Image (cartoon, rainbow, N blue to C red; front, side):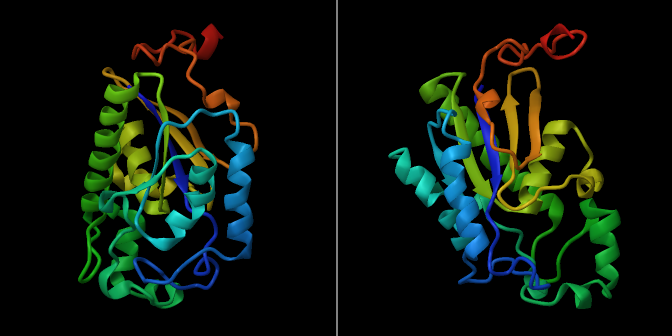
Length: 229
C-alpha cells in the first residue's frame, strides 16, 4: 500500500482568536499561514507526490494550492476529510465552551462526545479513516505500493486517523498533538499501518521516500527496531 502525508492546514485567521471556527465559511490563511504554505515547496521538494487531496474548506485548499500547482497536480477535495461539524458550538469562544458540561466529555471521553446539532467524534474518525484508506487503496492500485500522496485536513481529523493507525482507542486521541502545517505520515500495508511521523514541523522530509529497508513495504516489522538497531 501507499504512504500518506497527513498535513494540517497552515495557520488560519481563526487560529489564536479563541473561537471555534469549525466549518464557518471565509476562514482562510493569515500572513503566517501563507508563509507556512509557501514553505511546503521546499520542505517536500525531495518527496515525490502522486496526488494532493484536501478538505473542501478554504484554509485547507489554500494551504496546498501552491504545492499542487508546482507539481502540476490538481487539488482533489473530499467531504470525508472535512472539519468536524461542531454544530451549535461553531463560532463560539473556547473559554465559554470550556464551561459547558460536554467540554469535559470531549476532553476525557471523546468516543462518547457528540456536539449539539453536529457530529460525534467517533463518527468523524470513522468517515475520515474510511476516506483516507479508500484513497490510499485507489492510489496504490493506480500507481503502485511505493506511491506517496498528501492530504490536507484538520487537527481533530488527523488525530482520529492517527489514533486508528496506532491502534489507540479514540479516548486517547487527545494525547496526540498536531500543530498548524505539521506533517504526520502513515504507511498502510496489508498487515498493519506504520506510523512514520507525528507532528513534524521540520524541513528535511527526504526520509519519507519509501525504501523498504524498515520492512513496512511488506507489512513486516523489523525485529529489534528500525534498521535492525
